[in-house]
Image (cartoon, rainbow, N blue to C red):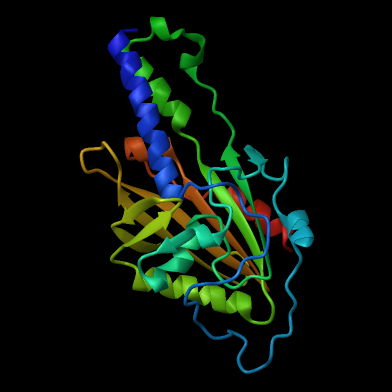
Length: 274
């Protein structure tokens, strides 16, 4: 393998890592506590005038309901770590209606939650025919293909948040309203870094839970010659608990290949909330 190719690999890895950090809003670590809402969540209860007296689950109860090792076949489940913000206070958007979207994309509660927790769910490594070859024996194309395949894995941060009364319904409405209000794009700031999204579009939701909404957020990728990449988010309400799914696939972003929030992850989480 030529030295120039190795250098190009290192540069590509660095750019990919930076893109992921900006897209996800890199900060000091994952969240596992109750959060307060500093944005403009709006909406009305879907159950009409009857008063909702539901009580939010505790963090301990949410942890038991969160995905764990072995729950989703073909996926590895672990802590979020430092890839995502430690709290929603570290994440903001330049437009108030877009803040619930920014929070959902950061693995944080999109509303005024009583408790919240999250997990990182990563697609298991796929076998590669190039794995038996050493880097020195690969052609330029084989090397590029192997590198792209190594990054072609969906990573989903799954956030669970629970609310008192009709808080979950209001938080869900703030997300669905935000998808419409933020169609022209918005800018997210987290940990001193900013990411401008050029557009937000409604996508087909899974239909799980009591109600669900899905959207794609597009941004111009760094060092891509102006190419746009899209990350995917879905928010599902199960009673007074919301689940947010934010998915990114660096390999697909680089190649332009279509991908989505994994249905296997959504189904596995939905099964634990029944």
